[in-house]
Length: 448
Image 1 (cartoon, rainbow, N blue to C red):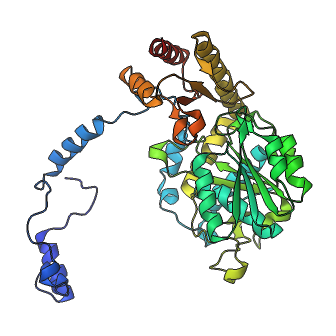
Image 2: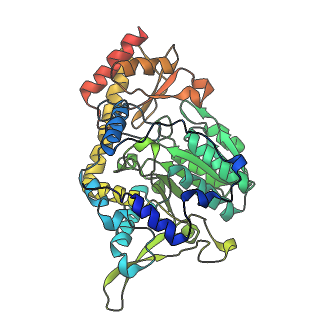
């Protein structure tokens, strides 16, 4: 029988105990007093054979509702997008999925080149000069950007729009607390940042202004207006952006952003229970030496052959802690590779077409929902998410949709009390006209 692991036999156990010089496993716990040891049987089932266990776990797994069988309209930062089949093929190669840190360039050229290509494509999408070799996720990338701005400007205030993902704002507050920074949330108006409210809070002690593009509600923020306010007092302008949307939207780098961050999950990374993901971090040449994490650079060897190396490694393992730009000791290189493969497979035209399909299908859904008599809360320019209001709790709406074989949207009342009974619906390129029509029909029947 082929095993996926190496089972331990009684003979193996006996030999291991002999090697370390004890008679039994109990002797290993001799230092723990008898009085505090658990006496009795654990409340767990008796051990089952491998085949019995696989059957039982398969039955439990079958109870889960998944996006392969149910169409999903749940987004809010994690999306159901098309993944080219080649993605899994490439990242399943052992030289990639077992790789860790490519410290030795002479044996890590494949990994280093893949990361370099990721950096290059992120720069093209964002319109920035340089990008790092990925971070944990979009939320931590955003928080690192804000910390960079505070260190660069030596200011103590961070202005962040309430239209930024709630979880990203929570991560930002956690980072800021340790640095004794003040996080001030700017209210929204009509689904986007209240520009007048932002201007009123702007002063010379502001390190940065943080917005999301498209924002948490799917709306397109007025970056030109916000950029002027952010820079008028020498603050920095940070934009958290969905990289797929940048296939059609004007890159933040073209609109004056100092730092662009986000999550590469839309490219080749499945939802997988909300993580792990892959954060990206892009900025200007001026801030290149302040970037957290790693950078991969292109060079030539002594024979003039093209090669890749880690460069500008301003991390605490390499230089004095007070000079380090980040304590990130790892990255999401495998997920960055997945994103790189997906972007490469799609190409520039494919990324644009995929983004356009999100726009067109979301607009089709919005128009159909309005025709059913439902209210769409925000009607400004948007990408692939819309906010729909109901006269009953969203938990009831979603339970009804689930009974009809549909995964519903996100309950905005969880994070925005003023948006109680409002649902955030995501419509990606994978949703068919039939699925959208079915969603609209069920919403209309529920609302009637």
